[in-house]
Image 1: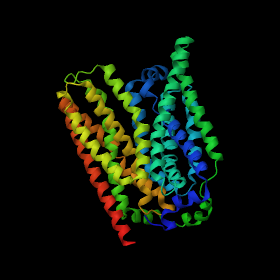
Image 2 (image 1 turned 120 degrees about the vertical axis):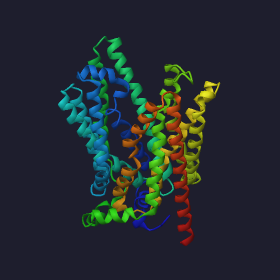
Image 3 (image 1 turned 135 degrees about the vertical axis):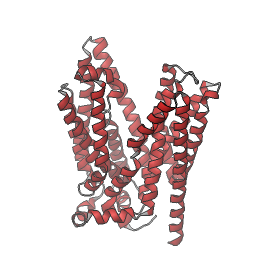
Image 4 (image 1 turned 60 degrees about the vertical axis):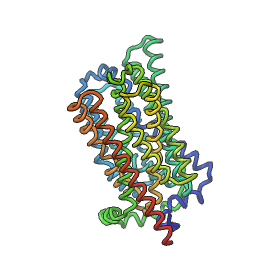
Length: 434
């Protein structure tokens, strides 16, 4: 990795200008922010029937809302990176949290469907355009060169833990309001929305008051104003390390997508798990996120981020192939172990791939744009995988369709491992030349 401050300035400057304790406090706040801002958008995971009742909408209309949200996300990835290079990430994150919370307060009033479209559109902007690249860049800024793995591992693993804890508190509040106090489901749902909305607003205020880790941000402002976006994009597109990182994220993210199908697969008659048993196993898998994310990050910093990522990608590929053989397994406990192992590997991959950004030799003033560029490629499976999954499960009913799907994901995971090997080889070659 280059020692040139212009190439790794964010991570070099952070340890010099911020104490270790201060940076970890800032990381904790960012983890809480990332864990708090998204759940309010995806309350349908737990409260879908309640939402249909409260908002007086159909399942099709609910689908339109989330389709619009996903489309805005995809469109916003690149502009999000451009914006993060021109506005301090701290300011963007603070604005995102406060604006998301304010839209949540409007959401709590059970407005019309037209207003819901406006709210979800607004959320697409406040969590996509102004938040996504900003938080990735902010974490990279406060992490030292030898802390990138653990910081990004903490971001993903800690975010999952925060989401799980908040979901537990929210459902407890909902149950207390509707069952203990005998209030309506609308009142219970409103209390849940209030919890998330006020938490976002409060965090936004706190993060807005936390100082920037890099005191030289103002000094780079002039350089940012003179930059040409198209020229910067062309320069980033020619960066082979960044291209390999995009491939790693593209392949690794598909492993995460495959976990959405585990519950339905385990419930197929050839495997024989009940809905409750399948749901319990897949819920337990969610708790593997802190283990995989944080553990993978620490191992990456202790040994090698790319090496740990290579092991995780190939291990996930092998485990998915093993899961394809689940119908022939007599032990449901073994199936559960395989699912949980895939969960650990999945979250280790998610916690590590962004930590490689520090090794791509991207100038600090275009880091946000680089994040946006990688995100456009890396998260494009959001638009493709539902179609692949739907085609296979519809045309090949039963476990066979899922086996074909998992086989495809296993291949992509192995391909990601190959990309990670190439990434590591390029780093070694660059190190030998210095």
